[in-house]
Amino acid sequence: MRLAIAAVLVATALAAAGCGAVGIVTASDGNAVQGKVLFKENCGGCHTLANAGTTGTTGPDLDAAFAAAKGPLFRGPDTLQTIRDIVRGQIAYADSNPDTGTPSDPTIGMPANILRGQQARDVAVYVAECAANPHCGVK
Image 1: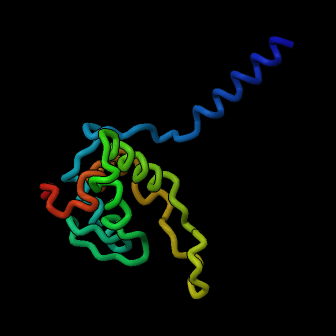
Image 2: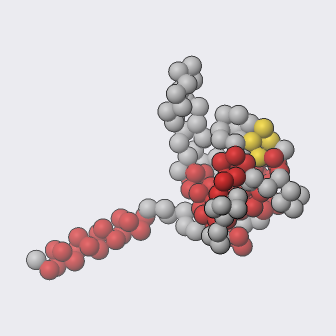
């Protein structure tokens, strides 16, 4: 019986370890300058981000999406880390067919695998640094 319980616990731990497999993205894991270039090329057609000079309307406005989190009421020591992880997760697990409530085009969504690996980390670092901060210093 103990062996069966141990086997179930090990299997559960292994399954849980696969969740969030993209891992944590720290500031040193990415290059914000390269992330800006990649963002403009791959993301700016759909997303608004003032620092990048993009005004996409299909996806969320990233300045607006992260403004409250980066504002004085909510910003904390882990804010940028959380935003990096959210952005990296959204890239890795894109919803290419969201329920947008738009009957004329219900398939508008983020393309799967638009960026991978280092490129995705670069964009996550850039967006965390520059969303809701148009003068973030990334050229």
